[in-house]
Each structure stands twice: as structure tokens, then as C-alpha cells.
Image (cartoon, rainbow, N blue to C red; front, side):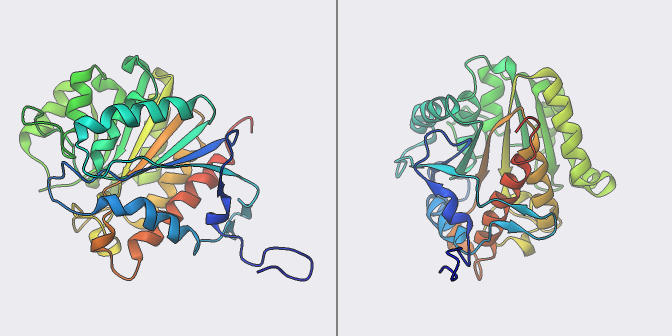
Length: 303
């Protein structure tokens, strides 16, 4: 609806999306559902996410940030129905490579966490030049001997040649991982930050530290936002969510910081299962996360 001066009375985040090949930001749906430790309907997430954007304003009254003039190229959804994590690798890599040529930031909406591995590969054929930051309750270091699943993308990336020193994992939960996974992470040189570290130092401070660390040693950074890092009572639509996770406010603050860093070239939002959601809580969190990410992006140096 427009007022008598022709202004849109409710400019929503959905209104930013369109076919804009030269836009600075691109959105890609990757609703991969196969290969889940806990079977679910993560394939529904991209569509539900887009609908939730209609209920999210482009204006942040707390900072005076208006996003209405920031077009986002909607690259659509990859055809991943019934596709295994192994077979989804090439389509996701190619999509990221193509989008990276024209867009400064790629936002990929999963799908389960198996999309993270090809997402990282999409940034560079030389993984030694890529940094990975994960906000996740889990290490995702399950063995790969039985095949690729949403529980082992970090294991697979280590095997692919991503140096452990290029990985920072924040939000790891107690009683949600194994001793062997912890030992593997430390032996690989991964920087490990637990939920206790988040409480002691603050999520924003840890994110800022991680971005500084990875930015100093990598040409580009990929960030995995696994929503099961959030306190389960605040985010019911995550099958792997646990009590005691970070708050949605901290998740939003992390998104804004990530969006602002000039070396972050791609991010994903994973493990959102709309079939588990209650009263659209998780969907609206996902939409607000996107708004926070873009608000951060508008403050990138040199824009």
C-alpha cells in the first residue's frame, strides 16, 4: 500500500528481492534435506524464509538504518529434492562460484548443514586461502567413512585440505558432542569457543575476535550460521537445538558484525526445519537475521 505521496507504507525485506545481476548481495536457496542425522524437512526452509521476509520491515529504528535502497539478487533455489550431500556438492559449488563473480556477499539459505562444505569450496579452489567461522552447538566432526551427512561437513573440509587454523567454532554445547570430536578439533588446530566462553566474554566479542583472526590470515571468509546454536526455547524449529544455547539477540548481533566484515564473501543459514516451528518463531528469527546481516553489510568500509 502507498500513501498519497506515492511512498510504500510497509516496505518489507521481501521487497528487496528481485532479478538484479549487478546487486552487491545475492540470495540462494539450497534446501538440502537428505543425509540428516535426525530426518526432517529442512527442504522447506527457503520458501518459508522468503514468506517471513514479507513480515519484516526494512527499517531499524534503533540505529536509523534503512535498507529499502539495497537490492538483493534472488538467484532462486537449487533443485536438491532427494539429492544426497555428495551429489549436491557440484551444483552448490558452481552456483557459489558464479555468484561470487558479480556479488560481494552471497547468502545461502539451507537446507541442512551439509551445504556448508560445498559453500566453502565455492569461494576458492585453494582452501588454504579460505577461513571458516561456525556458530554451531556441534563440531560437525563425525567420521566421513560412512558417507557425507549434516554431522560431518567440518570433518570433510579438513580432509579436503582446509587447515584447522583457518577454522573458528563458536557456541559449542556441553553434552552435545563427544570427547573424540573435541580432541580432533584441538589436534587440527581449530579455535574452539564453548557456550561457557560465550557467557564469559560475550558472543559479539568472540565474533569480532574470530573475524580479526581469520581476516589476517585468509583472503575470504565463509560463515555458517547453524540455528541450533540458539537456546531451544527461543528457536523451536531446529532439530539439534539444546537448552542453554545463545540468545536470539546475540545471534542477531553476530549477523550484523559478520555482514560488516569486508572479507566475508558468503554465509549460510542451516538446520531450520519449518515442520518443527511454533507460531512462526523460527521463521521470523531467520528473517530478522537476514535484516541484521544486511544492516551490517551497509556499514562495510568503502561502500
